Length: 325
Ligand SMILES: [Mg+2]
Image (cartoon, rainbow, N blue to C red):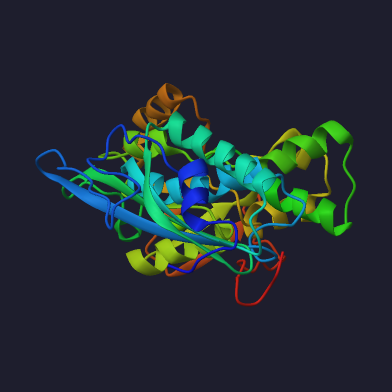
């Protein structure tokens, strides 16, 4: 562990140490102890890193950053249908700023409390602002939702609404303007995404494949199609969008919904015969779902409009090695 000027251990004690509710042993020893897991459950593990300038803007409030850092990780557990248990946090920051830490910890723990999970360990060091969280979840053995299960004939679904985070980014970039209230709502979607944890678990046994949308629908669906060895047709006019995005020109709507990242909605496939059950499961979780296309045996992704005509517009997935936000 590197040492920070203002005391790494004081910092951890003050901001990041709480009595664990579920983990057997939390922050403060060389290792945390999680479990034992209920019989037959598998441990689901995922890590996501947030780097300033790549994954978030310097204008974001610390509490929202704390929320988002955990939310994007919980979204990965949601995509697997896992129940979150605990997480670790590795945090590098240029200097110890108590106002930042106070806000960051508040946002982080508010979301952790919402899901009843413990921060069980991690590390802090001086360095460029960089947040890495690893989440641990539990899923009944063999029931995790995978990217590889989509079958020709399945319907494709997404949760929530798409494209708001990208629209907020375009406002920050100055390419479009939005009225105050509309901007606040899309900015909130970018900075404070809602991981669809309950929906992911409700889809176990119903969905044949799932992924969370972090880099844009076209790119993320591409992962599912590649892993499943299938193709798909998506109706761009069936994609769900917010009122704010609906007020924008059609080409921008398509770009935001198909290529915009940071939605953290679930994209999943299910047999058409399961449609009623899918809608019932979503309703129980209080999340909207929309049917957006179908899985096909023919490889490749075809994006069409309501009339069935192929869209001429090209869409590129967000790539963190190529583009800064
Ligand atoms: Mg993911």
